[in-house]
Image (cartoon, rainbow, N blue to C red; front, side, top):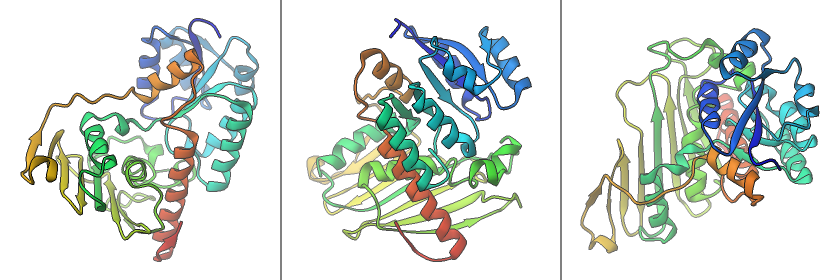
Length: 327
């Protein structure tokens, strides 16, 4: 391995692609050596901005011995092929969520990643939020008792204020709308805290008459009786990101970066916090560090990525059928 991880950016399709590229370019442990895009004009312009090579084909990227890794920001519908090829070429993989559009494809990607021992990281940045990390410690220590209810609300105004790119409403590329995009964050957080659910029930609607949902709620049911609610949408203004927990010994709420909780550790009095000492590396940092140091990923893993795909597939089946779906 060279001193710097040499990365090729794969597609500028996703809204976070440019931000990822800028972040990686600023890393002392990383060098962006190229761009490939399924839309050549977009790719060549981006490569010019980044002052790096534009690859005419994805196969050219994978055959280049100078390339260590790929950062995949392509349409979700392309993820399976791109990641299978990258893994089989022994290129390390960073990807935007979600992993794939089907569980079958997710398991195929997992098999290729494990077989070829490549470093894989999926972008689950909400697991690095300081208030969320504080809550994770409390929940893991059972300071709130057994969690009986969890709710995560993550929304924005992308549809009603018309600032999302048009391709985010393309069902064939995205696999859906608000839930599979913005709703991925509540879904993976719920799994991170509570584990895999047993059933999911969904209601998805379109407020702005887009071909995919822009207003969505999924209710997850657990073996031990716990309920979790994942709320998302592109049709809300000034509605802060929020998380709630209810447990047999206490409660916790996060809203707008502030956290309030009560449990035996606080003598059952509500304590409010806005500053936290907790820390976790961003997924991109974690990915680069794992490659440089040859360490095994313990966060943002392929197993977490597959679990998210399982829940999303079930959530959409529920919305389409109007039935509760077993996972």
